[in-house]
Amino acid sequence: MIAKSVFGLDSGPEARETIGEWIEAMEQWDTPSVQIDLDVLDRNLRETANAAARAGVKLRPHTKTHKSVWIAKEQLRYGATGITVAKLGEAEVMAEAGINDILIAFPVIGAPKLERLGRLMENAKITLSTDDVDVARQLSAFGRSLNREISLYVDVNTGLNRCGKEPGDETADVVKRITDLPNIRVTGLMTHSGHAYGYNSNDAVREIAKQEAESLLLTKRKVEEAGISIEEISVGSTPTSKFVADIAGLGVTEMRPGAYVFGDGTQWTMGLIGQELLAMTIVATVVGRPRPGTIIIDAGSKTLSSDVSKYHPGYGIILGHSGAVIERLSEEHGIVKVPDSGAYEIGQQLRIVPNHCCVVTNLQDRLTGVRNGRFEKWLPVDARGQIR
Image 1 (cartoon, helix red, strand yellow):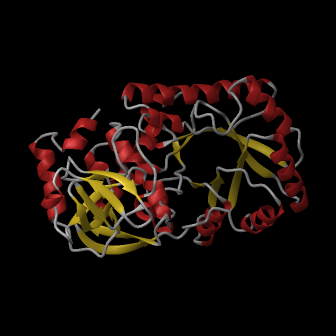
Image 2 (tube, one colour; image 1 turned 180 degrees about the horizontal axis):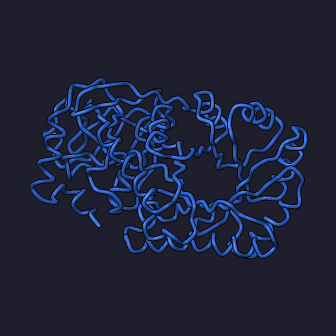
Image 3 (tube, helix red, strand yellow; image 1 turned 135 degrees about the horizontal axis):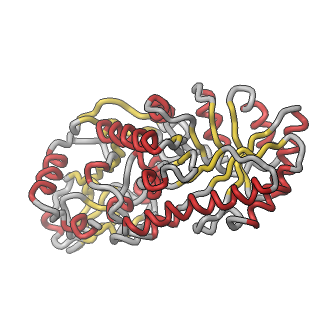
């Protein structure tokens, strides 16, 4: 657990020196600027791909974090077998760019979306997902209209209490009923253990990783007792992906982490990653000192997002300023509580680690790719706003 060192940046001279060099190397940026350290990004992509390969688990990363064709293709270059998206619109963007193996990890429902899905399936291998027999009936009729088989993952609840029936008999019954439908083939069981973010103990997150695997494998056994073959056991979440070595050989075939590409303040302060894996930071400018103890920065909810973290106060971590707390946001303003507002100058630039990287990405048209603190390239957010 490293939360204390994050607040005070007091984890030793080496860490302080690294952060100081990072901040000192900044150019004068047109702010707010969402920046991606390309060296750190590359390291995150490479190390996660290698960890999956060592465990014998396929990597199908979730691209909702970055929504970038270029990053998705980098993930594939490092060995990902396909990608995961949250919405049909994201799948359309990725398929248009030539990515042809896509899991849509969200139910596709209704005639307008099914019409788009039909066009999409002409150009890419698409796997769909649901936890509901009525959704599967719509997909069955859709498959029949196209005279083709629909590949489907069935979602299982392993603790997040969002989508999915309970593991074991309850989900097995859903799978049996879906399998009876024409033009549908259940090819996998999937889960997302996002509740792992609620723990800042490696042992606790490791246990959740094991539990999600065991819950899916229990369900698989129940399904196969009915003579139904399940090819893929697909686990999700960035926290549990860090412990893929602990589930190697259990029967998990695939993992779908997303936020590992950038890292963020929540991952950092829960002790999941170190400072060296933070690829995304935000540069903001001090634009006001309206009263003692308060400064205003030019990054509000349209830049930082309104997501908070249970592991540190405020709406992000300002590097090098342990006493500063971004305590309130309006759309364009960040209201920062500081020990001494006189210590800050108008025009001074601050570097912030956001609480949640995925939301920040979707607020931008493009991200700023930097190397050694200097601009290198723009990273367009190709699937920005694709929420349908």
